[in-house]
Each structure stands twice: as C-alpha cells, then as structure tokens.
Length: 250
Image 1 (cartoon, one colour):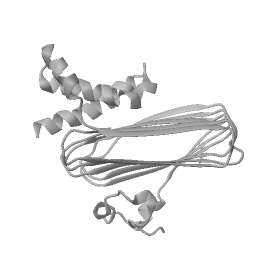
Image 2 (cartoon, rainbow, N blue to C red):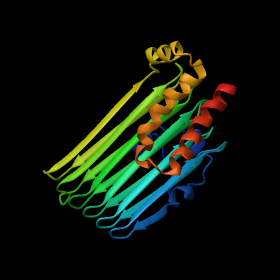
Image 3 (cartoon, rainbow, N blue to C red):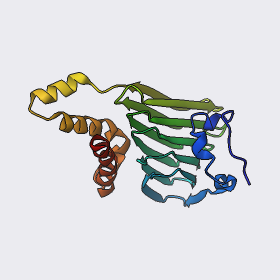
C-alpha cells in the first residue's frame, strides 16, 4: 500500500491535496499495465474527468519497433490527474496528445515519464491547456535517456491559454540524458488570447462567441493533429469545446 503524496514529492507539487485526501492510499497502486508487442501499433483516445476527483495511472511497455499513441482530454469539473509511464524498446515510438480545459477552481494535470533505454526510439508529446476562473492546468514531463539510448529523438511541447486573470498553468519539463548521440527538445509558453485575431474575426462578421470557439479549437489542434482523418479527433474536439460552451452558459 502506498502512502498519499505530499507537497515535498516533486511529481505532485502542483496537485490538489484536498482532493487527493479523498482517495484511499491504495489508489496509488492501481496502474493499468499495457504491453505493445514488437512491430504493433496501438492507439487509445480518452475523455476523462467528472464532478469528483479522478486518478488515472497507465504504464506502457512498448516493444521493439512498436508504436503507442495516446490522446486524452481532461474536461471534468474536479481534480483530475492522468499519469503515464512509458518504457521504449529499440526503434519504438510514443505519441501523446493531451488537452486540459475548464473553469471553476479545479486542477487538471498530466504527468509523463518516458524512458528511452534503447537505441533509435522516438517520442513526441504535445499538451495544450485552456483555463478560466480559478482553474489550473499542469504538465510535468520527464524524459530519461539511458546510456544505451543512442539516436534518441524526443520532444515535449506545452502551451497554456488563460482566458481570465485568476486562471493559471504550470509546466515542468525535465530531461536526464546519459547518451551522447541524441536529439531532445522541450518548449513551454503561457499566454492570453490573441485580441488582434479576435478583432479581425469580429470585423469579418463573426460573433465574439464563435470567434472565441474557433481560436480555442485552433489552439488545441496541435495536441490532436496526429489524429487527422480519424473520427476520434472530432470526438475529442467536441468534448473539449463543449466544456467551453457549458462554461459560457454558467
């Protein structure tokens, strides 16, 4: 049985500890274990979050030449955390697209730990966060490249969009590299909506609500770009944008 984390635990530093106190300690032991066999491709799309705290913990073991794709929208009104641990074998790939969106005072967060322990594995993680009210969106992403992880190519990209002054976003990219022939990159940016773009769209006859929805759709599109041509892309877009509409109606 695992003890509940505290603020001293780096991977939980931005969590909602009042919400965590509602979980039994053994909730931290509940991992979904997924193994993807050599040369296989698995794609999974999720919409998570509700009106009570949720914790989703996933371990992916990606064998030689295999590909794991995970796309998640966190859209609940209470604390939601999606935590993913990935182990990549030689030539394997991990693709992750995540969106956190909502208002109120909820914390919504992704935490990933990607282990490049073999040669020529690749990973790409894109997270977009849209919040208003007193809400918070977090992304904590760690990439570990072992001594055997030569020719690793790994990237993380986080962008946060704050629609109101009280909202916040946190990003903590972390790289630990022990190989010398690698390409690793990370980026993080947090800002407000482009008022020039909104003005331009209004000048073309679009209502403020429609303009806002289109701009937010464009903002989160990068996180779901790898789903191009898949019906799941629209399902995830719809889930995210419904939260925006519900927030406007509240």
